[in-house]
Image 1 (tube, one colour):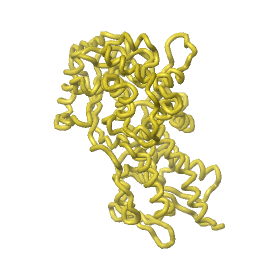
Image 2 (tube, one colour):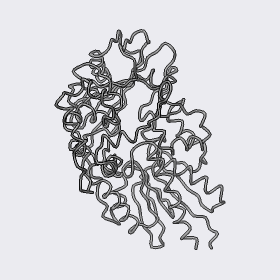
Image 3 (cartoon, one colour):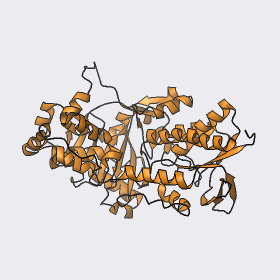
Image 4 (cartoon, one colour):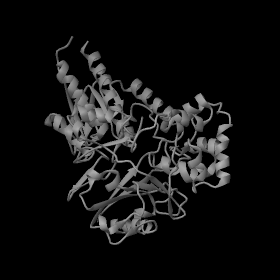
Amino acid sequence: MSDKTYHITIVGGGITGLTAAFYLQKEIEEKGLPIQFQLLEENGRLGGKIQTWRHEGFVIEQGPDSFLERKTSAAQLATDLGLAQELVRNSTGQAYIWHNERLIPIPEGAVMGVPTKLMPFVTTDLISWSGKIRAAADLILPASSGDGDISVGEFFRRRLGDEVIENLIQPLLSGVYSGDIDNLSLLASFPQFAQMEKQHRSLILAMKKSRPQAKVQGKPKGIFLTLKNGLESLVEGVEKELPASAIRKNTGVKELLKQESGKYTLVMKDGERMETDAVLFTVPHAVAEPLLRPYTSVPSLPQAKPHMVATISMAFPESAVDLGLEGTGFIVPRNAGAKITACTWAHRKWPHTTPAGAALLRCFVGKAKEQSFMELTDEEVMELALRDLHKTMTIRQKPDFYRVTRLQNAIPYVVGHQAWARDVSEKVASSLPGVMLAGASYNGVGVPDCIDQGKKAVPHLLETVQRLRK
């Protein structure tokens, strides 16, 4: 067995690449492996879409603000970084849906919009009587006989009808995957729903059986976690644990060259060349595809037309904001006529983010077919959000300060995404052994999904090196 030193390169410094680097470093240290690695990031900062603005005592997320506790990899990464004591759970409270310029409570027992309790659904003003009767047809409709992928919209329309989709399910699911649910892949985004239908036939009955039956005393426990100083604490924690020599910022890759020896040469945008034994690309597929194209016919990411989304975080004195309701925020159906798509009352949902006596409102803008906000200045986006908010609450002044963050939305996964991802993985493995792809373009867009992909890539990278050592 060779005693030479081998080299692994991770391209992309978002949470996927950082996770891979962190767990790869742990394996190298614990097992004394003769491996060096470098993480290359084209921008001047790490973390990708994870970015926390800490300002005047506020902790304001400019990208994702939390992760589901049941997806355990994110909390595990925090624990492995020594940050377990920094984990914070969301405060629970009533959430609402904008309906006829009023905020209507989301019916109790609605799981991702699917009703599981009779009376709250019967009495809600969100759905007409004809819509409620149509939704009840789910109890008698047969299960689908096919196994192929369909859109989330098609699936739920067949089970529950148009009105429940538009007024309840669409705004709830769009909070997870921004975009058009009539293009969104069921199998890639919400495979549990397809599985429930197969097992129980009725989606309502399946959801009802999956809900915890025991009554919990007091206020229900929040299902989301973040960190006291923001999600960027994860990014900073990983960077602190990695050798400084292993991280190279402001370093973009222009070309991937496959050598006859089985090694690879990465050509940087400044002309520098780096030889490596294995490569993990964690950049968006649109960035990776041109680098792979000379060696394999990797298809472009199938998707609806990409669109921009924006968050607008606004800070006020608490006395200047009268929400009028108890709760943590609201979501907006796409047919409601509003420009914003959701608003989180962050000082209630995440009290740690806001100093005493202050209020923090975080609004979201950007629909797949409505991109006019892109022509507006940040101040005009803020004014747009305030115009909508004034329809449902009292705000007595302009914010003390605000921050608008615009992000390219390269998601959602469209119908057929899973088959596409398998095809890409197989083609790359066949044509470019030692090259791997991971990240939000492939097998999940949430923070835990990306962490899972980065962590799972490590043993495959080590297997590549192990083959070379023999």
